[in-house]
Image (tube, rainbow, N blue to C red; front, side, top):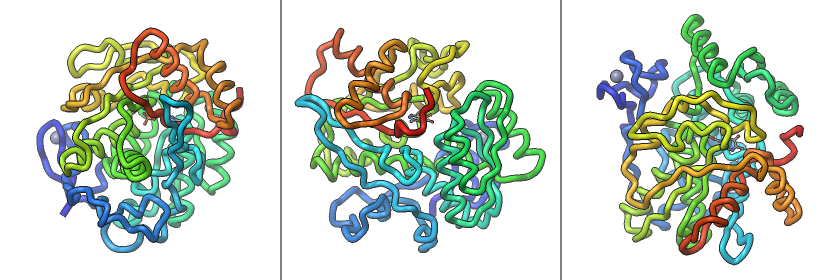
Length: 362
Ligand SMILES: Cc1ncc(COP(=O)(O)O)c(C=O)c1O
Ligand SMILES: [Zn+2]
């Protein structure tokens, strides 16, 4: 039976705990080993991420009442060297639906009737939508300056939005304080390991769609929820013998907020974030920095920067080819362009287009 384990002291917690982290302050990881990945276990009758449910820590069938049909996004060639995966084609227009679906299923499964969450916009929007579907009441904290469109979308799902007058990190602190004071379940995408079980399906899909994994994956990293899910799934595919070579992982951060760039050991750099178009990855203090930086990944990983002045041109290049994405997603492409101008990349690459353009204001 899956359960949580504190990464700092090893204490174990049952899945239905109402704590979001260990009493020692340590973060939870999920003790769960799926069966070896094998196409014969995929449910070919479903065209959403639950086709992979044999590899997810689900109990019962209540996920059927929570899913909005997320996942199964297209993975298509952009040019002869690059694939794009259209994760903006999701129910709430970002990749966060992969994780929110599992996270909110979990809340419902353990009998939670109200959740609190903080977000730069997309995760909150996604959690609000899945809570609406699951009949769970929801309050989302967003930092001042969050795009009004994202706020409207969150409210449209019946969630309460609290706009906090502070940075993204201060907003998270305030939200956690409220959760603790009022005993409300903190359904947070960064803390809760169930979220990463959802984001790992990104890699399952690429593998199923292409029959292999491209040599280099470019992934935007703020808190690293897509990145950690992808790394987890890649290790699963590797250990199950589906792939014999792990791709290199490129972690894209904004040059205006890059705590993981140039860091030494397991500690993120202390930085003062500056305003950036890439609001989705503007995380000054990523909670799982140690896990991101030190997790053993034989395929190799490197943090690279998205140049701020490359974001709008990259967004235009993508939309001129039919892909209308938000600025944070354009930043991933900008980082790819900038990297390939100064380095030779071996093999082919894939970037995730994980947020839709309709959400950005600027
Ligand atoms: C469009 C988009 N891309 C990337 C990210 C980064 O995700 P994470 O903070 O989990 O690394 C976000 C987060 O909000 C996002 O909205
Ligand atoms: Zn602990």
